[in-house]
Length: 637
Image 1 (spheres, rainbow, N blue to C red):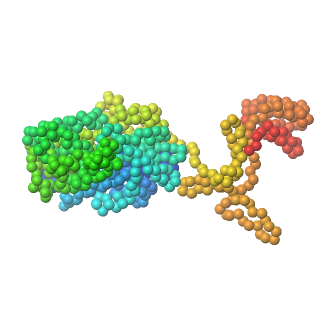
Image 2: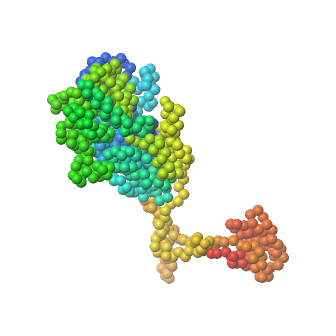
Image 3: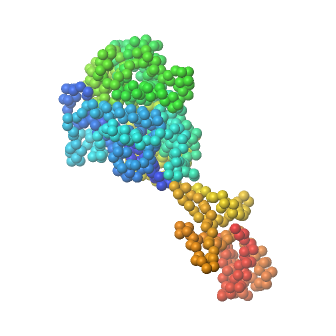
């Protein structure tokens, strides 16, 4: 069993597991932090951004593709844990020769489609007049400023995919539900479990009849809008692959939400605007719910909330129709009937308005002060670039970062000098190290495998030994482009036996509670399932006719000699020999057993734990006679 690590980002994993002749890819996250090396793509030509010094390249549509550690055309299936971990799917399904099946839940697929559609829209609506590629030459790259000169494998960076590629990739996905068991070629069975992190997010169980591997990625024990995490099904795992933990283990999500609301209220009361760079799904649902409860008590009910994204309408609608994937409290509202999320009421009362872009209706409805939720969190493309340019010069305005995927200081770099206030309130509901330690003690896997970042404290807080995984035995770690041989060997295989063959068996008890039976059969294997069938009966030759041949694909079965079990008590054996006329018997002890010498007959009987040898000179009758005496002390079966 081997694990291939194709990603260096622990919260955007891409691993390949080889298990029982199947090749399974676990997630295909797309690390977009490389976009921070590039200048923003403004919707409206910006003289200020155009005149920035050449410390970076003006090319906003390059992304990192996967390493060539493994031939991706050999991958049988891809298991997706959540919509953030499927953003590289079109690169794999459309450009590597992949012909397998992708498994994911319906909310994961639908919201993943929205994220990809938004990304493609942001990139394609700002076409580039020129394309820079010569900088990828190693001789030129080493002359560039950091971090571009230190970037690895820039030749594998790819342009953003198209909607045609997105649709083709998504057509290869097979929808699954929680606890649904999916057979893979008869070799293993995979089952998605609720991970509690996002709508439709899953952990996966990969098991055969005698082995069990759990894949835990992007999980949460907090009570938010998704179904709670299924922990019980993770018990008795031989190997638990753990990834996708919180990126900010020292930040409490509830505390961050409180800071978000208080900073938002303070800015709006002072006449300023609030900009929230965000994804079109996920944390935004919880933020809108908190604001729904907060704005009236804070006296902000007249302040408009704007959600701007090419997929804003679809995102808000999807969140209301996936009732079966929500936590119990929100599910129960559907049967009242009430909308599970309060943003439906915010939309009905015109407190929350959503638009596909800043053009069109938004320009007519826009009034200040206001709160704008828009993408992209990297501040490199999307409508957020326009608002950073529009509001960045005033200290009354505030940008609040809630997504932890990007360094907010690096994201702000092209906009400096910046007068607007910047607040960092990262909200990450995924498991922290305290929760992981508790989880591992409860489910007790034999082996834990995780990214090496989790086995040591963060570089900036090297004294914080509590910010790492602590388990026994110590976790095995992996890094990007590494192949890990998992410490687990398969020992058993399940074989079924046909009823008529089972009826013919005659078990014999060799020890209390243990019985054995010999079997002569044909082993039939198909689709990784094994079946013992009765052997064909040899055909008897008939007079005047040729003997019929037994089928070529089934060999003639010879009559097997019986198996022997038991031990020979030496004293009783000597007494038996004497009763049968043997005399002058001498017994010698050896390291492995005993030697019985029949001096008169010039014969030696060597008795050991697992064998008995009769050595005599060319006297077959004597050998057979002694053999029969030995067999009296042994069981046949």
